[in-house]
Amino acid sequence: MDGILNINKPQGLTSFDIVARVKRITGERHTGHAGTLDPLATGVLPICLGKATRVIEYLFNETKTYRAEIKLGVATDSYDSTGKVIKTADSSNVTRENLEAVLAAFRGSIMQTPPMFSAVKRQGVPLYKLARSGIEVERKSRPAQIDKLIIINWQSPFFSVEVVCGKGTYIRSLAQDIGQALGCGAVMNNLVRTRVGPFGLDEAITLEQLEQMVGSGYSDRYLYPPDYALQSFDAMVVNHEQQCLLAHGSPIILEANSSEIKPGAFGRVYNQEGVFVGMVEYDAANQRWQPHKVFLQSCCQQQASEQPQTEYS
Image 1: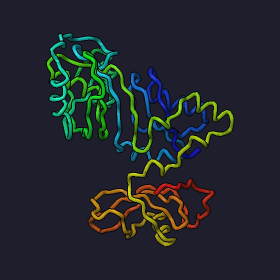
Image 2 (image 1 turned 90 degrees about the vertical axis):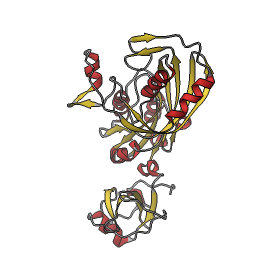
Image 3 (image 1 turned 180 degrees about the vertical axis):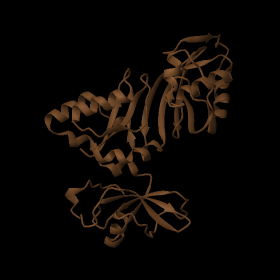
Image 4 (image 1 turned 60 degrees about the horizontal axis):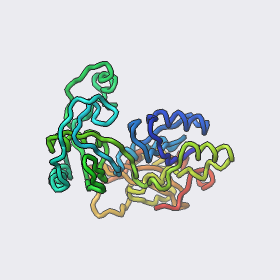
């Protein structure tokens, strides 16, 4: 099975739990997820199977959308409602207008400190393992991009926000920082991821649905081709000679759709039969496109039935 499943992760399971379940259901050993979700969180978790695991790194960089419920007046060691309460405060004086003013400071490019209960590693050890042992260490702040942050529900001491953000953004840290800015503390009470790149919650399937379809022999119904996850990258077409060069690791000259190509930009490449060839990276110094990941290994391999195809471009 070479493709991507859009799984609706249930609450209480880790992302690795989901990967293990998908392995068991599908029988595919080469399986990985594209973007960790906390056990508390639910929603979109793309699971890549077979050759599609090679696109995981591109999916990690995709924009993500969340709906988060946040509770005012409390702070915990994990920054969410599952942690140990370390502070409570009266939040009755916080109005929606106060909150709107505070949220403005968290839009755009911001700096975040990862929570102790996270998978970030310190000297090879995940922070959450240290936290469970009662050890807290200093964490370096890192940049995060918040493209959208709006209130979608207000019922003090709870409020809900929609967040559109870049990779590596911690919604728990965002809740913690908002609470500190308001002076009363806050924790993430609930989190749903509604989108990862082209994968939306409305099309996501449950593990039960997947198991039923695999048992019925219709597992391909929910399987997206690898290049479906790459729609945010320019699509370019190569001729047979260029395809052969890419298959052998050689750079090529291509015309991209974008008027200005940034150094290190990626593009997806198709042959003249519409078969997905692979991903290329722009070498600005030599004005060439270098092969980054080639899916169509043989330049003589032209039959569409042998490779995943797509109608997306």
